Amino acid sequence: MNEIKVGLIGFGNIGAGVVRLLQENAQTVQQKVGSGIILKRIADLDITSDRGVSVDPAMLTTDVNEIFNDPEISIVIELIGGYEPAKTFVLKAIEAGKHVVTANKALLALHGDEIYAAAARKGVEVQFEAAVGGGIPVLSAIKGNLSGNRFSSVFGIMNGTCNYILTRMTQEGADFEDVLKSAMELGYAEPDPTFDIEGVDTAHKLAVLASLCFGTKIDFNAIHTEGITAISGIDIRFAEQFGYRIKLLAIGKLTDDRQLEVRVHPTMIPLRNPLADVNGVFNAIHLTGDFVGPVLFYGRGAGQNPTASAIVGDLVALSRSISAGVQNRRSSPLGFMDNTITTLPLKPMEEIITSFMLRFTAQDQPGVLAGIAGVLGKNGISIESMVQTARHNGGQAVPIVIKTHEAREGAIRTALAEIDSFDFISEKSRLIRIEDNLE
Image 1 (cartoon, rainbow, N blue to C red):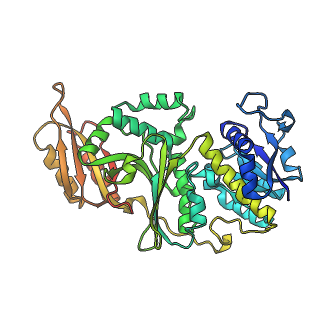
Image 2: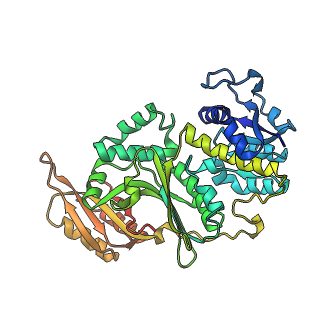
């Protein structure tokens, strides 16, 4: 085929980036594919606003069915995001016998099984490199060059908005709300940043990554998910006193008894760990395979250009297959048919074992430390170190911060519930998990 024709659904910021890349690097793309990739139709509800790229107005339509019903279009790019109507559009494209490229991690995390099964029935492919890590080619590596490995862990910083906020809070001592406002003004956060700051976006990405790494279906709703809204400057300062930095981390681990840990939460990581120096809007994803060992992917995890790069990379891969006449490739990203995929059990969060930083706000009076230590000891929680600051401005409430040895999460939560019932506790106690041995 001399030309491979493409339809684009969603002409927003990322869609405009894809158009610009295909225009500016058309010759480069053609050399790598052997065929020209021609963007034939763009569908969006708004076809009048200036996107900063010039396109033939005849390409634009508000009727997405013009893409589905066009027999010349071989590949559909879905860039509208969210669950609906994205799911309906993707399934319609597949039913029309068209390959799909998407950056929609939310859609894949919740409805991936249905989409992959539909693609398998129609003999088409679904590619989604841009769904995780923006321009970082981590999914291609897992499905390709690293596919001979059995993975024991995948973890990383996967949300640029949260990393930007935590970086400025750490480096400047800025308040969460002020930095969030700045992130929105700079375009690093959505007008509604809830999915970012509450960890949902990161959990979507972890669901996709963990399913690929561990060859199992992941129930998105079973992923323990916490965001960064409760992290304060005092938490950051105490973490640094203990030799750690706080990052929003996605963690996937395969335990020795073949259970999966999949969790998203603020995490204290040692300053010596490379992830501690991943700042701003950058992302980093760490994999450990049995033969390759540890591998770290680093780069811009979002933004117009990096995401467009990943999308066009998927276009090139699909176009090469089409040009070579390859048909009926297995669409499942796990590499085998859906009815052979096992589902590994997820380890309950209360059974997770790690170290913790516990912060109590207590009245400065005799017996407080003894009371806290007694409850921790009763629940089998050993104290490694402790920091207690002096009173400020004559106030009676002071922070007491304890770093524990490894303990079971369920025991920690039981202990905190009892400690919080004491009269000398002024605020609800806080816990932040610590990961000393990320590998």
